[in-house]
Image (cartoon, rainbow, N blue to C red; front, top):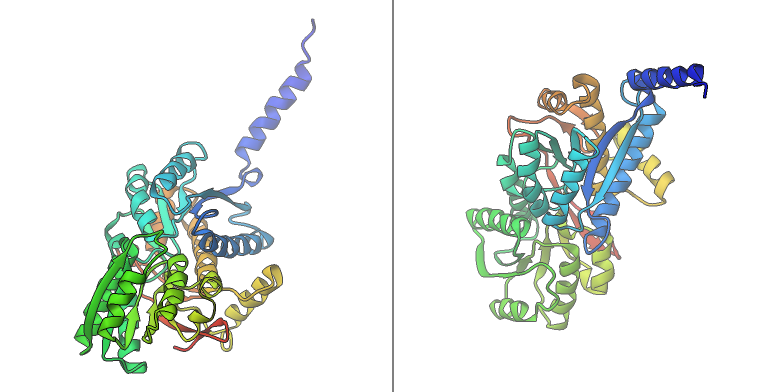
Length: 370
């Protein structure tokens, strides 16, 4: 049988051209975030911000002429699931950078493997203080809990004029570190901690802890945790007649909190990574407008930080190339990147220095008050 050499050589040549032409390939970026399960609202917010950024990057010519694509993996807010996702993204998909994880405990669980594999891990939401020392390939564009706890304490003392506080913290890396930061700053500012309680993630009955706290009559309850548990805590606190002001962390900042708590959420406060002011900043105005046009709602801080993370990574790839070491070097060399969450640059630990804001639940929605 006669071989169709012309066709065969044509296909070989086409394959060589395709392999050698970088424009035929996409810049693939991994993402590990909770897309299902209890943390799905967090993952949805992250995905909205990343997708909008990728869409705008691609409409402007991509990165060095190549389109970007995001490979999503669902971690279900589980360290074990996230480690499997990281293994897939690095061993099979061969990505040099992964955005994630969302939760601090999950990021701390996968950081050692990312560091071992020399793959950049970039979180747009994890705030635990311990992440600072996770490795040379670990970055985040959100400020740490020590700053969040200090902001919460100073707001409680100076703006809410509280003198006594109880702490009801989630017993995980996020809740413990944030509770510790608040406790230290509140006491340093002259406040008194009258009760210190905790609960495990996934709990649904907090009446025992809330009853103890009610007995001390604190002015304020600081309760760092996730929105699922926080919504139930507010509802049960109201049922028990606990009159204290409730102040939570960024983990409780989600529309589902208000749905879960109902009217019990009204008047509660939350520290959240600050976003730029759309009133005075045209870039923020453009982001908010594009977000509303695409999703039909206002962006939250999680979406804003994810949006900035995607744009920062794209900038790093343009300057450093599409390799883990090239991206890492470009991130460390970043100087005052202008984003919708303010200027970003990283210190020698891959950390940023950014402020926190405070939101209040007012008329059934989150309103920034500080």
